[in-house]
Image (cartoon, rainbow, N blue to C red; front, side, top):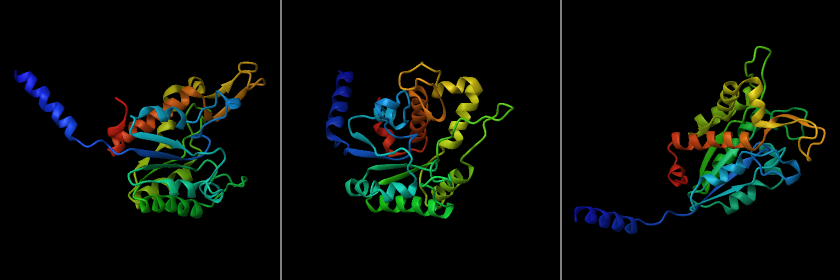
Length: 244
């Protein structure tokens, strides 16, 4: 009888609790996060496996685009529609830097512009009573002659860290954590995380491919799992919506 009473009480509590409000997690960023075209497979953005981590109260809307920087993402009118659709309680995961930092690209932004753009993403998100989360640009696979990972985003990743601290925004440091992952896997094994293909190994790349920036399915999932781990560690309300 006591067990039945406990079960009954639990059922009453379950029915008494209001259902969680449905929210959207917006992903804005570059090619390391974006949804890939079929003709580029097995290249995979980490935002692709990320969509499967959450329960039915969460919709992941991946707006990341290849080659975009904090500036071009706004100039091409990709940010305004996100702001217009954003609802209270939503999350916005912001990951740029790969294209901001390269001076030879049209997407280049100065360090000051990069910082100002990040602050705008934060303020626009908070004005809609949504939750910004900053991510440093995910590390490239880059080893020195002694087999140690060498960073390629040092300056722009540090700007993201500084902006997150100055504006009290949750930070996921994909630069540092991805570097640690590659170091753990080592020079040769870490190739298994990236779009590395021998000639004729895949019909999309008959001449082969050696890409140390973009992930394959395994690498994308490993990076997405780093993001998921940080959502829990940071204690975000979003963690309560992770699929059991």
